[in-house]
Image 1 (cartoon, rainbow, N blue to C red):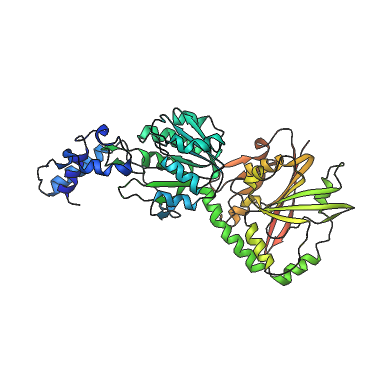
Image 2: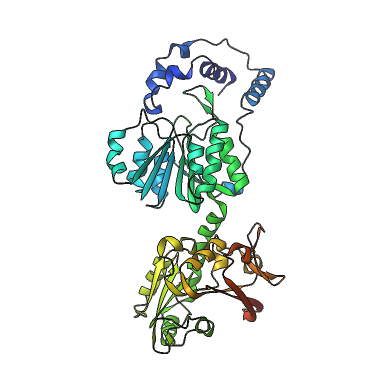
Length: 475
């Protein structure tokens, strides 16, 4: 666009029509208002298209947008972003169910789309004014508790929810930088590790209102400062785009799942699986037997977290029935793989789709005698949360038994799912993230728990690697 055309456009939308003249209607019905606005027909004197005028124009733009200009994002923050034709298409990409909040709803147009497509268990809606809201449509949803309305300041209301509470947060509130910053800063705290935040109207300027928007600046700051990256960009014909962001470590973890599936597709075939099944009737691992409660029931229940397609827990202990629940995010893929071998599997073992971070939403508290994990927690996207969840679903007097390869993530250069290092420092179990953030396990767990460890060396390929056995006993 040449300088005269740009100047005419900016002059028309800046100061020559007030927000209240054209924005009493929604964006979807605002086009006719804008077309019939006489202010838009005012002529702007022609300017010569000289280098000097272009420089002045550019400098004027820099000055005008200085308070909302977003910080530039790195290429790494955009590499996994999928561009979609509109914001509604973003909803098609998201998991169904869960707990969702919409910040700013106006008539409730997009809340209806969320209910229709995402089908949340609960949709919280926050707005400061429900005058234009379609109360009649939402009344049945409110009555049965699927929709909960909250009226007041959005950032304040968001702050009252527990951290990591929402699967999806749609931010469409105050679009000034200050307002967007307050909402998005709260959203960062309240979204789950595998959740998503969608920032509506990701643009520095609203042509319909003739005002600046601070959404891109606030969203970019969240991505840079809080470890998020772009997941989806939903386009809009007038530039009112939607940007969906996810926590970067979760995106890395999610992308690594394909590597894990490829590994098992290569190493596991029918012959190997049949040999595995022949050897299944072996005793429970000694470290599991050692930590069984003296009052264990006739049926011993064990949760194998991050099990993969096969479990190495064992299946026999005296006259007890050993029941193993395998938990893995690729459970459905593994089931399909094993079904292709057409081999009868152990009926006492079942595999469920899920992550260690989701354990509390899948199982009740104190469900299992033993919670076990072999070479899996360095694959998780939040091992501290995972271990706390494992503690929650373990029975009193039970044990959580975790085996990891020391510093496996850094050894493999953080390839695929390997994003966390476990090591021993000053006789303490220490975890490091892929950004080298340090966590001492004792400090992250309940003080009433008893935590111990031992180590051993074993060859992995041509390398001798140290393994760490971690045992957490519940009182």
